[in-house]
Image 1 (tube, rainbow, N blue to C red):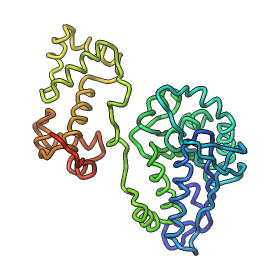
Image 2 (cartoon, helix red, strand yellow; image 1 turned 180 degrees about the vertical axis):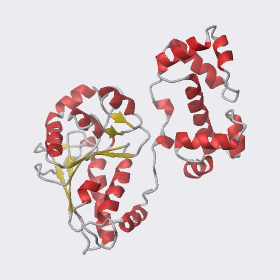
Image 3 (cartoon, rainbow, N blue to C red; image 1 turned 60 degrees about the vertical axis):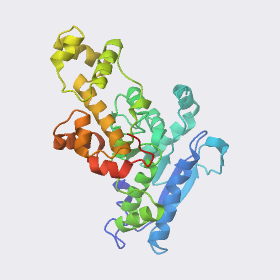
Image 4 (spheres, rainbow, N blue to C red; image 1 turned 30 degrees about the horizontal axis):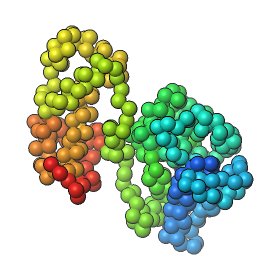
Length: 342
């Protein structure tokens, strides 16, 4: 978002702007009402924190339609599309049975509006699965992007020319910003506030709103049980065996012998069906189990490491941080559950 606020000069903080930032939120049928108002509400709080003399935000809810009914039947007052500095595209409900092609076809006026705004030089931002509208408008081709981890694989399938980064909370690439699921709208808004009103205002706004301003990844929130399981019958059997022996050392030869194939054949067939190696699956399963133990038990980090097959706690901690963005102790502090069971 730096290009949006570069025209704003210094006022107190190094990155603070000098003019009100014009933000339009694109409302459309079925969009999440909370995502329509979430960013404007946080910007309003930031303006109060910054004070009346500081540059603020002019926010409007816009639409190519005269009437918009959001999720839950909420009717929204909208204004016609007009020139803005930033256009925010909220997400919507995507159920397993949602016909995404039909949904996007119904939103052709919105797609056209997004494309026109981008062509005019407006910075375009999607929240959560609003990224699918940006993809439909052709804005993600050749760019890095993210969306909800739950729908990242589908976005990558539909938009193969994009570089989808499902671990990221917010990704900006040449005037187009995409965010992870739902609450990542606040991560985006805080970044926008930081750039337009300065880091002090962003920090204070985060504290007033009880919003975490130090998140860097959505990886810790991923629940693999909700994701489609890749692979065919062969790889599924291999994965089940690996999952049943998490604490045992990884032995590719023994694994291949168990399925009466060569190691080369095992690696090839597993990769063909899943797109990754058996070791990668084992590491992901071990980290998933370790997350559960850190959330729900009082076991030491060393004990958790041993329970999932790592005798060296340092090696485990490094791998855990690579997968989740947190060291084990920091993860436990952030995600520990009060209803923990062994």
